[in-house]
Image (cartoon, rainbow, N blue to C red; front, side):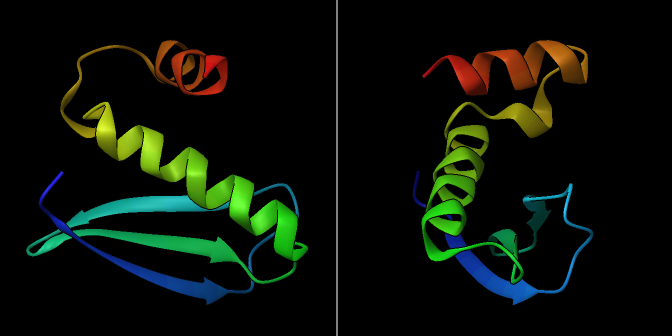
Length: 72
């Protein structure tokens, strides 16, 4: 994983813990600023799993991708 990772805290609906978007230089991770520190760490780790597993270039459905990310 040699891509750069940019991380931002933003207000999001409470049901959304994080969002990850590919960008020109790597990936941007948006973490929900309303989460506790521990929950933000969990959300960041979850986002990194998506990046590591190349989830953005997969043809699998989102439920399969999420299930794989939650197994680890």
